Length: 233
Image (tube, rainbow, N blue to C red):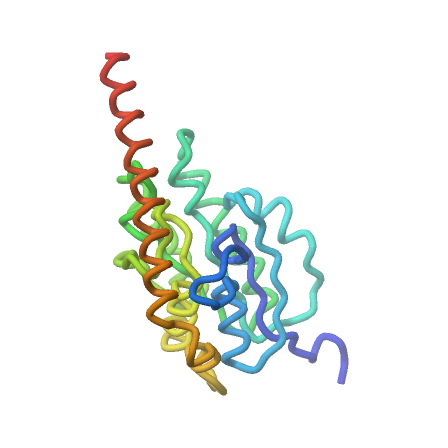
């Protein structure tokens, strides 16, 4: 078998959501949703996602690391940092997104892209979110990619208080939904890999208390920003 014929499993590019890492949640490690997908498919995993990356960073920094070996699945989740930026440019985003997906299509048997939640960030990212989602879906149609639609993603236990990053359970939830979308042989459900005793009443109470504390900090920051904006008018 030649190197070109050997499939290398799951390839993922994107930002901090796909990079993963962070605090435990009730004893569950915060791992990338794409890594959970690879574990569910019993495939090797290669991750090139970087915290804070925008789609232009995927094109300019992450894709050049790839060679021409092939993968079973390519995952692209990017745009969260783009739509939250003051210099949001839908045309530039569309061009770079198409470039990134074409590069993955040339190296992967299957493609999975992810849309952006409407309830993103504080203050909310607003109109650019749906602009980006339409671009993502159009690129997916052009390259035959499957779409994991996260427009409604945002449950309290699945998203951190910044309303951007998934919690450890949120990453598992994303992986479960991704496996439902993919037409591939699932060997094990990611949720079944979580230790049965992970969610105890004590851990749940501790988690709820931490969430309330951090959410109040976010709300206070929002009020300060709003007050400063009113004074500037």
